[in-house]
Image (cartoon, rainbow over the protein chains, first blue to last red):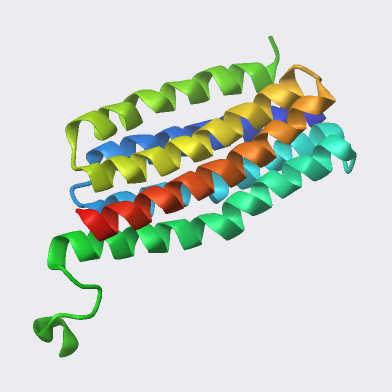
Length: 104
Length: 83
């Protein structure tokens, strides 16, 4: 039973992660690409950690897998925000809203 | 071969489209691709640690997640400032 659960979790994780990789290629703008990059650090990572926990339970390996997944989940939004600000600065020269954007 | 090593092997294919983006698009798009590559590398190491049954390898995905985050932050800051 646990083998089936591991197979399903890993299959979903791999499919979603590869979909995010293809999404980064297919997206048109940097900001669209950031959406796919952020998605790749959340759900697929949770699924892989869940698969490891099904096999390992809460052992040393399971705890370190939780830490790796938590690092991805909590740190990557900071990184993606910094990248979005950098892209905004490159494209528009500043991160503050343009006059035509303030009325929206 | 077990499910974890097979998953790690298939996940490695994700580097190909990301490498294409890094080579063919703007530098800032390459940084985005590099950040996702860091995530993929972390998941590959996590799968290999479980698939190979080596408990000491579990430290690698933790370090990879932290280091790819720091590296991506440095690239984002420098590109935003000097491009």
